[in-house]
Image 1 (cartoon, rainbow, N blue to C red):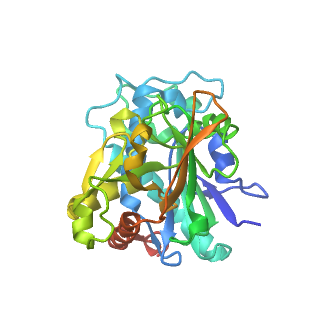
Image 2 (image 1 turned 90 degrees about the horizontal axis):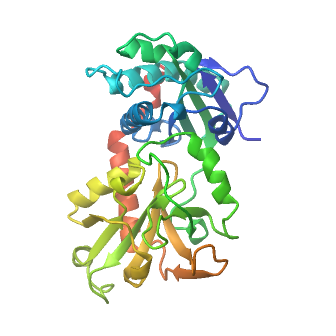
Image 3 (image 1 turned 180 degrees about the vertical axis):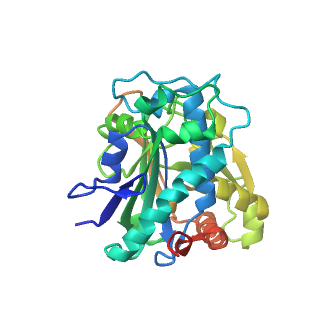
Length: 354
C-alpha cells in the first residue's frame, strides 16, 4: 500500500489512513501546488517558484472568485475585490504559512521512515468562511492567515524513466479550457472528472481546446510542439538544427496555467537562443510538428507519442498525429537543461528538518 501522510496546519491527520491527493483536493476548496523531491529525496524541485505560483493563485482566486478558496460550509463567502490592502505582501504571507507547516511535517515523515526514495508534495491553502466573517476591512496579512487552513500531503513518488518509449504520453483533445486558468485550484479536480469519462482507451492525458484546432494545455500539464521552419534538417549539427526549429505553446492569456516547468523552459530557450513562440499549437498545421511534449512538476518533461483530435465536434472517430521519434532531439535537450536548472534552484529538505 502506498505510504502517505496528511498534515493540517502542521498537525498529522488522525484518520487511520491518509487520503489520496485526489481525495484531498475533492474535499477542500482552495489554491494548491504540487512538486516533488530530487536526488533521492534530498532536495525540493523549484520550491521558491512553487511558492510564488501558489501566492499568485491565491490572490487571483480571492479577488476574482473567492468561492474557489472557501469551503461551502453554510457560511457566506466573503468578498475581497475591494477590501485588500494595497500593501498586502502575498508572497511573504504564503511562504510563512507553508514553511511553518513544512517544518512540522517533514521531521515527522523523516522520523517515521515510511517514505523512501522520492516524495510528491502537495500544499493546499483552503479558506474557512466561518473564521472570515468577522474580518476587519481592509484585510491584512494577519486576518487572511487566520482564516486559511494549510494542508500538506506527502506521498512516495516513482519517476518514470525518461526516454523509455512505453513512458511516452498519448494525448487526445476532449474538453474546453478552464475558467480562471492562470490559477491552480482544487475545484478543477472535480470538474475534470467529467472529461475523464470521455477519454479514449489508451490515452494518458486529455488536452483542452476551445475551438477544436488551437490546443491550450492538458488537464494536468502544459503542452508544447516543436516545429520545423524548414524540412530535412535532421542531419545538421545540433546548433544549426536549433536555429531552424521553433517551440510553440499557448500563451497564458489564452487561458493556460503558468506552469513552473513552462517558465523554466521559456528561460532555457532564451538562454540557448532557441525560438520560443507563445501561440496555441494549431492542429490544422500539425504536419509542421516534428516533436511534442508535455510538462508538469512531477513528470518534468514527458515526450508525446501521439495526439488524437475528433474529426467532428462530439465525434467518436479520431484523426491522429503520430510522431516518428520520441523523445526527439529538442525534447531530450530541454529535459537535460531543466534538470540542470533544478540542481541550481532546488531547496534542501534539511532546511525543514534541522
